[in-house]
Image: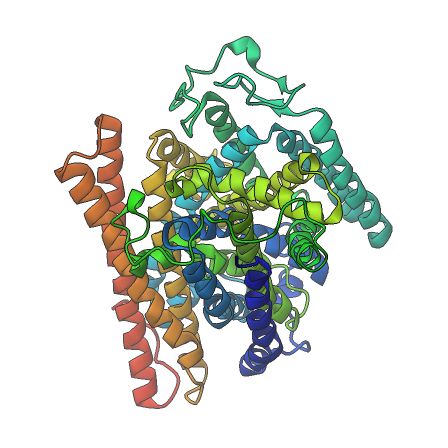
Length: 624
């Protein structure tokens, strides 16, 4: 039987070569220079532009980009097509495409005053291209918020211990922000004390797990779980709730979703020092411990046989199941759907929004971009490898089709708990700890996405003054860009998508939109480089861009035309009015996203062609 350690070895080799060699070349290629003043210092305002220490910013960036997708994606892909195709795409695609995407997005934003990729492309191709990219990004952000809020609810339902621990660390993060930025207290002693308190929060969560509503199935919660809203009944009255143990949107999950969305809206409106920076920094220690600890545990458990179970690939997970995947979900063609399914573990357009939205506004020195941009994405690839390893160890007791959202998340925690037994940690502690690690990723990504959505809409509508209007006064423009009102628009739409019950196709649509956004971010970087200097090579960004455009347009076409239009609507696969409306909406979204993406590629390619033919910098950008 194949040992899981080979999954870890493959990614460690390719990632090390990528960081030591390729990232060094890219740093010289974009001329990182610490003598230049970064936007964080130039525009420091105590709200959005706040210089951050490298470990603090790395914690924020890594926590924000590493959501549930690099866990759900590889596990689902491994279950459908086998673990070998998933491993190859993560090990090769991440350092050559995903890490390049993140680094170029961060570097480009840093050189454009910390503005978004939409602003950058608008500088060279005009307002039309800028608005198209911003609208594309905003629509993608809503899908991100919807999917991540649902996934957080699923994890908190499966592991109520993580709900308590998450509450503890959010409160600690607020305290740490006051400690650092208001009291100006020592950094290292504070780090030691607050990180220790975060890990103590895991123990508190295990002792006092919490849920919102009673479990549908008796005995589903750990003993001693505190049901907070039991006085409101069983929760069957909640929108979208299904009273079935096999359902994804059980009352408890349906209760957690709006709580997470409200939290994300509130957190996105607060100054970054209040919650975003300190929380992401503290949670990064959980993330490093979870990912790094699991990878090290695989090595230790394999070499010394200390794990409770052999760390080998389960018989229920095949190396390769065929081009169309396992019979239970066929037809599901490996090309292009493998890449759309794995999504963020290899390359993610959401990362370009983080890099050019919050991270670029906090970069202390230009040279920090190498570790945070390129290295941060390699960290996400390690998370994907960890997720694939948990799948390999735990396997599936039932049909491989269980590799969707509902099957992937508990698998990550339970498989991770088995892996951590290599260090003598019992599964009773290890599994809830890995669940908390997952929730930490998800919460940071959800509210960061909401903040980024606010930035997108501010740029679409047009900033006025400092851009800190509440949104409760003035017209539609003020409401759309308001610090407090804009996040409400996002979370209301996201909530409507979640309670429709069509979470399975929603995930595929999110994956396609996210991957196409990555292609557009690479297009933005290519346009920037072409306009910077006529001798700049465009292969490093242009080739990944062309590959991703091809993959994602075909993937979105499959989701929109085959799964929604043909299977759900024409063939009657969508049962009920809600499912039919959702299929229509998702088909329309897929068509709009394809149109916006291809239109932007055409506009960007036209700019690059004009610049290179002229042999100099581009003329004033037009709107064509």
